[in-house]
Amino acid sequence: MLFSTGQDEDGRKATVMAERFELSELGDVATFLELIEDGGTTAFITIGGRDRFAVVPVDKYAAVQAGAMRAERELAEAQERAAQAEQRAVEAERQLQRALVAAEEAAHDAKGFRTMASSEVGTLGNIAELSEEKRASGAVGEPPSQDDAPSAASAAAVGGAVGSVPYEVAVLPNTPIDSDDYQRSMWHDAILDRMRKVMAAEAPIERQRLFNTVRASFGIKRSGRDIQSHNEWLFNRSIEHRTTEFNGSTFVWLPDQDPATYGLFRVVSEDSGRQITEVPYEELACAMAAALAGGKALSRDELIEATMRSLGYKRKTTRVREVIGAALERAADERVVRLFSDGTFRAGN
Image (cartoon, rainbow, N blue to C red):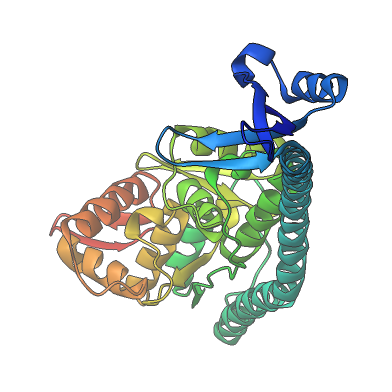
């Protein structure tokens, strides 16, 4: 509304309405202010509905509007700064995660080296004991030619002794990430480093056990098709290894481990979590040789149970019987063991 100062009918000074405008007709407040300045009148703005309204001087209304616009601009700028700060925080968190991975893995390196050393010492100790026994019995002679050399399990069966060591489990740091990050290149080195740690501690190892151990250390509970393919791609591209197959499973070996001359079996504990399906044939054959040492003759069921207990398993489940039974058939074909007419098995020769 526009108001001007004048006199009423009694000659008294009064403020009367000169003209009324709807803001919708003027377009904006700036146009309204121009009209006021040109007309030299006093202006007020009524805000509200028909029953409740407020009359506000134009200059005050304009100041409020300007303040509101400044507040809106400042809010937008603050939101933009907050978004930028959040982005920097996300990047800082990723850098921190990478730093934590490096620190945790460095802290576990010493334990991995101790595990490797312990396994090597155990192996050397068993070999030394076997050599001492052979020297005491006068069994040490010229080494066989390469063509006539028996497998490690066959040699153990004939010699009556094989090496056994506890099954050592790799200890990995726990670094939870999501499955999408697991497949990003920024985590490739960390995944490969953990694969190598598991190989150093547990090879020969069933390949899926290797992948599951590494995946679980990053807090990923399931191995979907994408995770599985990613693990296989990384492993085959970057990790030197040998492979053997047994009973539908693939086993991976360190490059300096020779399955043909491998002469150990590893005894599991309750904490190791290694299933009978995760034991390679070479270890099963060595465990059979140990069970038949000293000229023992055992029935099929007795040999399966003795082999199972040599490996540290306590329950002769259907799966245990199937896996060791499959190994027994292969061992008989390779003459690691021999089946006699009375139905008993004895060490091969």
